[in-house]
Amino acid sequence: MSVVFIGDGILTKQNGDQLANFYHCKACNELLAVGCNINGRLRGAINSNLLQDVNQLGNPIQIQPRLLSAAEKLERWDKLWGVLNGF
Image (cartoon, rainbow, N blue to C red; front, top):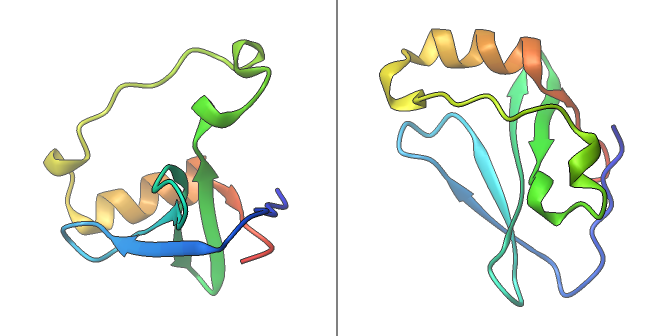
């Protein structure tokens, strides 16, 4: 997955356990993507609500990340997330 954001820049925030980076638009503060360095690669996912054809995606998976340990989160993200380029 290659991600290129156009605009005034990206603001990076971290989650409570400091594992993932949340990338927000500096102009409107909209969440653009989430990412984490896993095994030397930036893995992540984009905010599907920003996609024009979001209805072509599968059904969302509901999870409660606060119930997962740090190791469980990293393992899950490594399996589900793509590789982010362009950051």
